[in-house]
Length: 202
View (cartoon, rainbow, N blue to C red):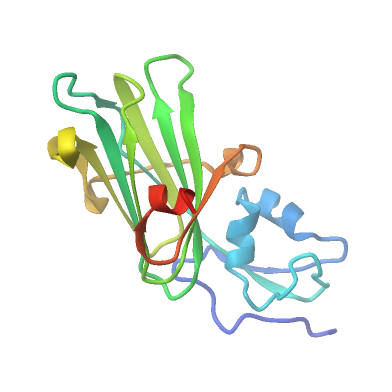
């Protein structure tokens, strides 16, 4: 164990490698790099038990990307909901966080907070009722996750003006990680081409 365990390779776009020192824990290392704990664990599958790390172990420090729609105004006569699609294009099961934010108040209020577990090649699809006249959707994930946000009308008709594909989303300078481990998240697992709503009914 003196040489420590090392990853075969780190995730795409990772921030760097960290060599574990005496007294380190995964939780403390995650806090040091402003990461959710599960993001650090997910980036290091060579550490079979995250509660047992040893001096000399080498960890991959992942990069999390926070994407935002920016503030969107509801189409009052047309819009009934907002759709969120998250696709895992990586070869590993990943954790993704989704925040639904009411921006009609100051400070803004988080209306829903979802923590998604998405298996390789799978989609999370969910439609939410409109909860504010001005809203924002934020998604935090590692590279390789594709996101689309749709304004939805009756019978799930897409409203073009409030629809943003992945390339149209704003990359935020600061991630949601500072909130991630202190918030109450609804947990959803997507292991096939199913919606989060169907998952929650199991």
